Image (cartoon, rainbow, N blue to C red; front, side):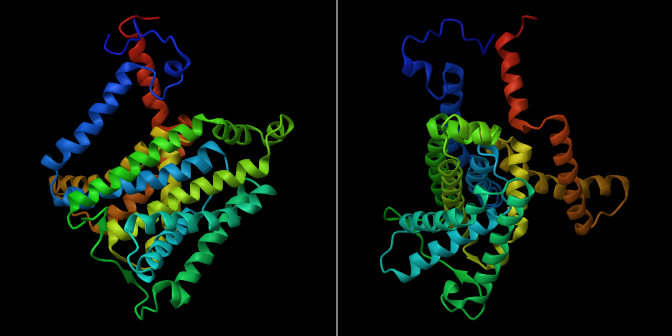
Length: 358
């Protein structure tokens, strides 16, 4: 009864093609934004900002980029961590080497250089696909790990191999508190989320999905595989590069190449698999799951062990987390390949009919 479309008439093409055609969805999104801007700062403490909210926002942004490439275009990539590293180090060098460079422009510059690297390593997708493409993008991960570790220019000749940024500001406002960092990341996520949603609904988004479903048939009907695949790599790498810059500048503050290792690439791929391939909403679900599950296990397992009189070590919790991730990925691939986003969609469809049985 609360999620019905009765009386919601669409009399124009614009009304029929809007992102959220159902009024309840629009009100829910507006309420969620108001909650994020008003209620969250009142109820969240510093730990929640640093450990949960800021990582969730940045990883959601990175998952958006991965989902465009893997979920919408069907190009398997294991180099997402490398694109994040390129975005972080390019933004760092732009920020420290150019006097007076605004932080937001530096972050976007990091995304631009990540786009160039993504297009370069996306060229093999024109000839290979599947496992072979995954190996080709894995080469980007190993190459970037080596370059940022061995070439001292990228770290501004730092003797320790790590880089750090401080005195951040955006639009003349100093970013010196967890709340301001949260608002900065939220602003980036909202802008790129709206852009990504409109992209996948546009002509280029339909080309990506045609290439994903059957590239030979897409070429027969006039879609250019070169343009479609490389544009997917470009857009995906740009978003991931901006997320990498935010991860380094806002979340870490000081980092080294190990912060963007191959584990990060697998983590982003797990997000889109669990959250839902080919779904913008799935990127948020996957990021929330990846961020919250380790924190939940670190609190729940020791408490359960103390309840039954068994001491559970930190290593056991870490191993349990890895095993649980693996089991969930297998379960989602077998039972629900479209992930949590599909379960969310099924729930909405049932609400549209409830309480009627048909």
